[in-house]
Length: 228
Length: 228
DNA sequence: CAAATATAACAGTATTACTATCATATATTA
DNA sequence: TAATATATGATAGTAATACTGTTATATTTG
Image (tube, rainbow over all chains, first blue to last red; front, side, top):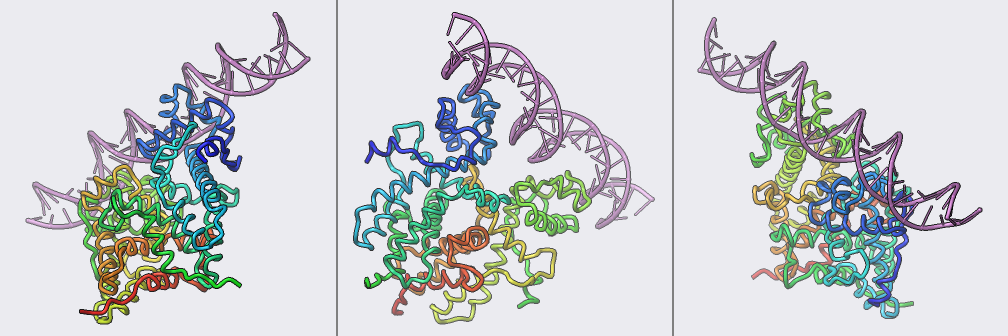
């Protein structure tokens, strides 16, 4: 599993980038260091000029990979969701019991990436933090409909849909499977954020995880459908 | 009720502004027109220069009310949550039955502001749209802990806490009342956003509302506590 | 009417988010 | 190996942003 993950390639919509960052050493350094820098200074303070200084490359060279930092964020987010999707599909693959399958999916999707599983240039632990702190900014824009049309959110949508399908498989009578799926994914990012910055607004802490909360919530809401 | 709402004043942390915008005609025009402009062009494209042109005032005059547009957003958001809090407290005030009280609270908090109830310079319908599209940006920053310490999010926190208390009152055994409260508030903003831009990711549409979804979810999760 | 205060007008600065041009290094292929 | 294509680097430049500062002119208040 570990080994497999090291060599997977996440298929990202090629409209997001100008030149594929996986195709060169400079491209990989752009990805690697932008993750470190966005984590350190936040997306607002992060600029291509600063990134250029950091990787000892030129600002204009970075523009040859990404039109702007917004597109870079879309790339990082797509990679993250693609990576999570892969892990989820892999982990739930052999499970026949629908409840167990959904359980495993929720576990993978709402868990933090605790240990650094990365072998490559991408640090998934930091990328997870970036998604918690910055992902909303990638779609809360006036361009969201055009960018959605261009397929920039396709991996995220596919992931929500996979969860939706597992919910329907377990309880075909539940009336809000899509909303529950999107609530679990978005809500878990939010609970992690609250745990860090607004502990009064969450029950999640060192001992209780967002995973436990959403696992409990989902199975209070869902009742197994008797298979036909 | 309508009349009362027209004359209420939301008590907003005076560190958020340099000069109280409620204290002058220019201040009110800043609030009034910034709501219209942020709704039209989005928070990123909105600038004090443009606002100055629109209200035929000077950029530097606007800076005498708000340090920057981020603080203005915090002001608008605080006003919105304060207004919602007022409506919720008012609407649930006389209700003795704990389940009915919580129901009413969830209804007020997750409903859109359908009709323009505004009498004053604040358009609550547009403000609700702004909160859906921009609120996350007010706290997803590197300054969140300092700003939280300075009390910039106090009204929102109080609102989540009120909902938390109603949840506990109805079901004292439920283990995640804070998380459920924050999920309902944040999640309903998210479901409204999805309904508008990612309809595949939600079951909410013209006939099904986020209110129905969260009402159903909350009461699947909670079971009345037998009063002692 | 005088004094205080609020607002307007204008200028100026550092930074951002790019775009453009040209030079040079490296890789490819003929 | 020379010619050529491609990638990257260095440098300059532009319009816009996010302010700050100064001075002039209204408007309010005592």
